View 1 (cartoon, one colour):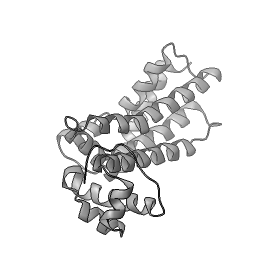
View 2: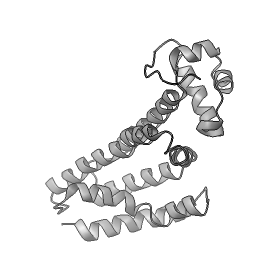
View 3: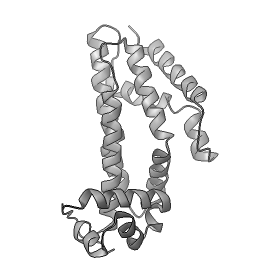
View 4: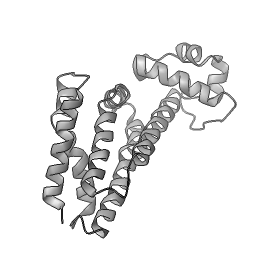
Length: 205
């Protein structure tokens, strides 16, 4: 696929192309994904694929951004803002853990790491559409908790960064360094419960 163009063109089969690309990228990775396979999975010609995405990097970035944005919005939609802060954090933590331990979360992370040197813009795009969105929403949630008198936080941005890191305890190192791909509900619940308890012990009013 030709590289260099930075323009994405919309069209009738745009979503169809993205669906096929998502399937192939997750199966074969960025480098292993061929234009022929993507076009076949999408049910379009290579000419149609090129007309929408003249650069494979643009296609992969669009797939990653859309999926991350969808996951982030889904997580926000699951939150009951009338619940106690500890319960809200529990919901956020469960959603976060489910995402980064999911098949998609693991694959997109490994692809971003593998392509970091040659494809740094992918990491930036992934951050902007995923972790940054979560961080912004976390800041809003914590500000709400402060206004309600449930939290006492001086550095709200630091606290917003700390909570997701607490939710990675045990699971993330095992996933990255030991190659473990699945975790039981009990394992995930244990980590999230510990993250909420630790966070509230530090910042609970």
